[in-house]
Length: 257
Ligand SMILES: [Zn+2]
Image 1 (cartoon, helix red, strand yellow):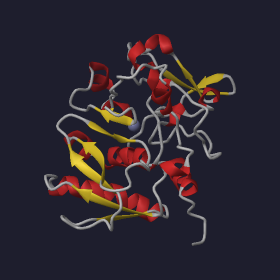
Image 2 (cartoon, protein in one colour):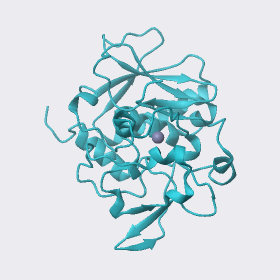
Image 3 (cartoon, helix red, strand yellow):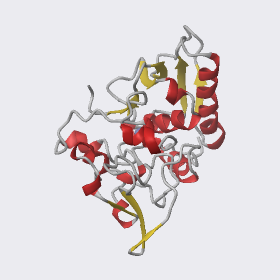
Image 4 (spheres, protein in one colour):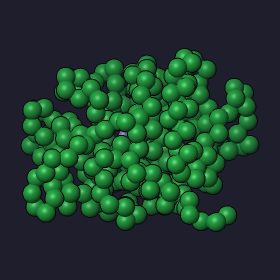
């Protein structure tokens, strides 16, 4: 399994996810943690925004394809999810009809998977043609917000709480997190925040009980000026203004072409 994949195992969600966190983003998500956490590539997964221009999609137009076995409603949820990016950023997602050509370019391919949701983070410059798979099971497909979360991974965003500056904004309680999930909470210096303020409302942010051994206690505490504060985290309603701002900066939406 490629180390660049983040996987969501909705149907196989652990009890902690099913019991309490039905609507939190990480309840859709689990993680094939096959790589040792000291591995440099494993660490690379947990940064926030990719820095290398090579990991961004070339141009502002992205083609996408919806698998033919999606129901009409599921396909409609994908289109609804992507329309947000079309309307609120300079990116243009254009759907390829079945058998339609992507002009020799790589395209995002929304595929069904029985119990996995996941995708590779960022553009893969070594594979400029063919599909960039986004695997979504029925539960993920039912929520445009989850499709948007996944699509933001495709565009090059990791999770918000993995930002290199996050320790100024959240406290992580590792005692309440199983060792195998610690990699979910690592930071790395080699990503950038594009000077966008830390965003508790990001759709890329986990909830306060994410991966908790004891779900009655938080694993992520919002932290402002040395004090714990209450903040909503882990929403799946849609991209926050901060998420959209990052995409606009990454894809140079202000630049005149
Ligand atoms: Zn994710």
